[in-house]
Length: 98
Image (tube, rainbow, N blue to C red; front, side):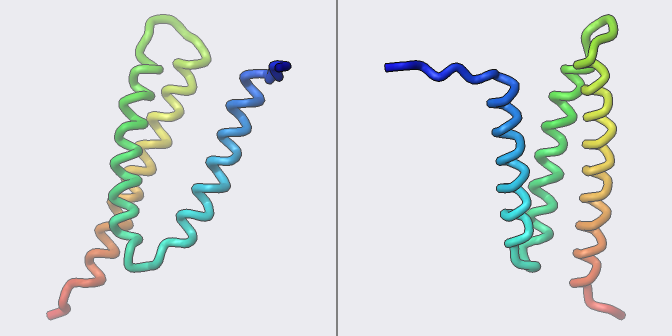
C-alpha cells in the first residue's frame, strides 16, 4: 500500500475549518429554550481554555506561543464575562415581576 504524506499544518487546518462549520450548525440549530444551558457549557469550556492559555503563556522568554496564549486568555475572559452577562439577563426574563 502507498502511504499518502500530508503536511501536518494542512491536516490540522482542515480539522479546524471543519470544527468551525460543525460548531456553527450545532449552535444555530439549538432551540431557544436550551440557550441558557448552552451558555453555561460554553463558559465551562472557556474556563478550560484559560487554563491551557495560562500554561502556554507561562514559560520564560518571548515566543509566538506565549503571545498566542496571552491573546487566548483575553478572548476567553471576554467570552466568559459575556456568557455570564447573557445568562443573567436571560434568567432575569423568567423571574416574576412585582
